[in-house]
Image (cartoon, rainbow, N blue to C red; front, side):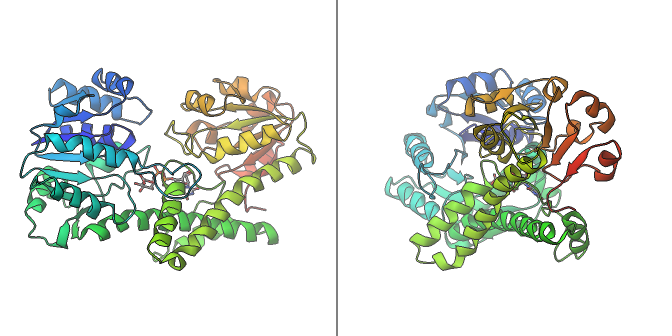
Length: 437
Ligand code: UGA
């Protein structure tokens, strides 16, 4: 099938490459010339494992191209809208400028019978509004909502092998003619047994925000338990193991630590609350305010613990932060808890050095006032305290004896509870976890 993918960020670039891998003829469109130049040269404009190899592979088949010109969408049977929906400046709501602009720009190139498929995370009600825009344009083109559940760091496999496909169509009927078209797009994952659900438009939009809200709630739940564990000297990691063995609860997303960040969970729960308010259902989501507050409190807690660890003062202390990305296998620093903690420590008088295998360039753009070191060893050199804030494999695998030889004082705060505390203590370290004795 001929497919256009509008918006080539984390979602769109991966989606375009994966659709080509599934055998479709795909054009990726974005207004950002630099991004399109990179993608056209089969280079990923951001770090995502497997993406660059996939771009190279599918570009050789001639099935994938990129353009800054929306006219390139002309003639595609399916148009995916994959643009960003960031948080509005100074407000909780989602900024729909890019979704609206992409749809408006696409209109002149649509032909009857084609389908427009939204994948961006949007406030419920957006799809119905865009469907109305298409209808008013008299195009006889259908609008569907097909939320995306990919995780950064696993984006390629999540797109090629999704755990479910959700199609939101007007009226919510399986018989809707566009359902068959989308079934052709996803023929390969469907044949391999991926479940698919057909819903109405608002349900499909809500599936996405509800899923992210649930994940955020799970993380904040365990972080609240970590606060209690700290108060009584219990161990939140064992608590999570034990409650996680109940498969109604499950162990995944129960890792207590510095909390969630990134371009999705934080802004999605806020946009969800804002939208509920507009719908007069704000009470239904007031618990998300608490989820957000617990999450933000983790960052302050780490700053306070670091102060304690350094003998109750941060002034002039050389602190090394291991990890800047919001999670491992990503160079994304949007709302990164690690960077936000690093910046706070620096503000409070510490001399902070940040290192990360992939995210330093993005981090330096966001917080130019911090000091960055590419080499882990140079970053460790003469540190008064280490903070492991993003659990990249290379930090989890640090040898406590070799590391002790590099630092000034062997003190470590394990912000992700991933190190073996007894091993580090045996090597002479003062070890602090979060919610661990
Ligand atoms: C999230 C969702 O997991 C995806 O399903 C969704 O498609 C995506 O948002 C999106 O809306 O596009 P992502 O932002 O890539 O994916 O990251 P997650 O893996 O969800 O992690 C989010 C944050 O939670 C990270 O900062 C991570 O370190 C933190 N986290 C995760 C914890 O603190 N504890 C955990 O147990 C798990």
